[in-house]
Length: 162
Image: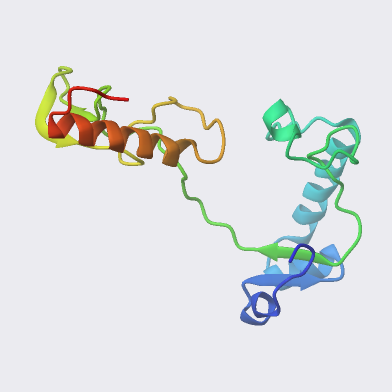
């Protein structure tokens, strides 16, 4: 439920809880001064409403998912009062900025732009249909459904693609 941290997350060490930022840094084994400086910088962004590091809240798409009671930027709430929580983060991807290039039927293309006979692909193994951006949740899986359908129709020899 919103606002409730599952006890198993804390018990397992997946999530770390502390009453102060100094205690959080110690429990996470990270640089205390670095954490305090980072939080101070972030809180400054909250005051100005401009995230100079990542641009959070700079797009209407982002702002509509923020908290409208927080001003001047609904995506930037200050970190001021404990308890404080931390989880380990690891890089990963949700989409792709590369991969197999396909045509409008989902056929995999050779370097010269010609299709490889009988080879179709869709999803995160292919170059994104929206280029180097991620317009929002579902964009990669939505394209997978659409191009999977189109590829199946094309591979089956169907004449009409809806």
